[in-house]
Structure formats: C-alpha cells, structure tokens
Amino acid sequence: MRPNRIKQIWREGGCVTLGWLSAPNAFTAEVMARQGFDALCIDMQHGLIDYADVWPMLQAISQTDTVPVVRVPWNDPQIIMKALDAGAYGIIVPLINTAEEAARAVAACRYPPAGIRSFGPVRAGMYAGPGYVEQANDEIVLFGMIETRQGIDNIEAICATPGLDSVYIGPADLSYALGLPPRGDNPHPLHLETCDRIRETAHRHGIKAAMHCASADFAAGAVARGFDLIMLTSDVASMTAGARAQLDRLAELKAEQAQARV
Image (cartoon, rainbow, N blue to C red; front, side):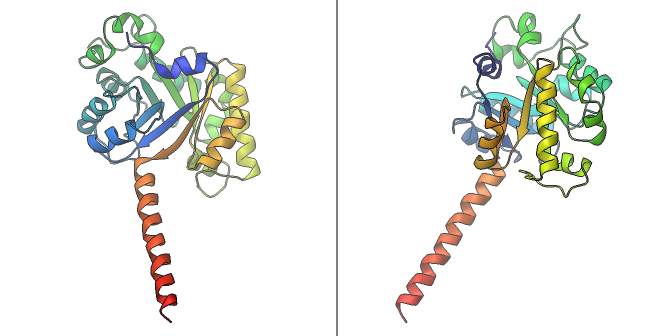
C-alpha cells in the first residue's frame, strides 16, 4: 500500500503543512496540489463541495505526492466510508464532543475487527495499490475536531480514545465556546491557552495536535508551540488575496501616475 506521507512526517518528528479546498473543482484542486503542501483537505462541511465533486478532486490530487484528506460534514459512518472508498487517506470529523463520539468515528474508519468499515474500496484500492485492505487501518489518519465547550471539557477522554490519531482545533467555533467573537488566528490569551492545553493533552496521550490557521505568521507560531500539523491557507483565500493584491497595487500606481501629472 502507498504509505501515508502524513504519518511518515510525524515519525520523522516534522510538522505537516495542510492546504484547504472549498471550491468544488478538480482543476483548482490540481493547482493547489502542485504548490508543495504535504496534504490537501477537501472540505465537505463548510465548502461548496458535495460527494459528486469529491472523487474528481481526489483524482486530481493523486497526480501528485500530496496526501488527500476529506473533512466530512458530520460524524456519519456512511459518508466517512464513502470518502475512504474514494481514496481519502485522512478524515477530519467535525464537532467531536465526547469519547463515545470519537470512538464512533474510529469505528467508521477501521475495517473489522478494529471497526465497522464495510469492504468496498472501489477507487481507494487502485490509488493505494496492493495491500490496501490489510494495511489501511494503520495508514489512514483520523482527526477529531475539538471546537465546543463540551469537547474542551472532555478532552482527556477524547484523546484517550483508541484509534484516534489526532485532535484538530477549529479556532472559530472554539472562540464561540470560550465566549469570544469567532475568528481564525485568534491571539486572545484565553484562546491561545486553551489551544495549548488541547495540544499538551493530546501529546500526553500519544496522539498529534493540529491547528487550523489563516496566515503564515500565525502558522509559524503554532509550529513553534509544538503543533504537529498546521492548515496554512485555502484555495478561496489565496484567490481572494491574489486578486486583492493586484487591484490594490494597480490603484497605487494609478494614484502615483495622477500625482505625477499634477
């Protein structure tokens, strides 16, 4: 089976760089996959992406060495299994609030006897190559998102769940949980302290901690604080920032030209 680069980087003591896909388009997925991210996440929860969009995007990503990840819309075994059968090598499950919910996600990602995943890796078997069924339980990475007050309160039990590979911090919803306005890259001391506590708890239980970021500056800080994966930027954010930068620069140059004519 094709090894999971995410796990390889972690074994080497490195931090994984994750990109984010919100637009339902295979070409933009291919463009992002060729920029040098270690992994790319196809977002079915808050993006515009449905399952019919997922498999062509996975095909586009698989032209590269970038690891394909899917954030499913809910902790639902049906969609988790379909994303895996389509070739996802990582699954992000939102709104994990209890150890029981974490165990339910684990079961959906693992073949028996470790879980309840049904056999049928229609595309995954082709993408991963020989040995997929025998090795998938060890190679697939499962992230459980911690982003609610209940999730924070139950973080010890969640991180102790057998088969959970990593907790993934959703900063905007976590801000809600802490009584703060929702935002990414939240510098509030309470938010930073809570994120660090989640990271420390994960590491104490032998699993990884991932931080969803919105800028290189904040991501670099998260790496320095010991996070094992950082989400750096998305397709939509990159397109918006690139267009805005060119429009702003054009406005500056036109203003300079107008001033020179005075």
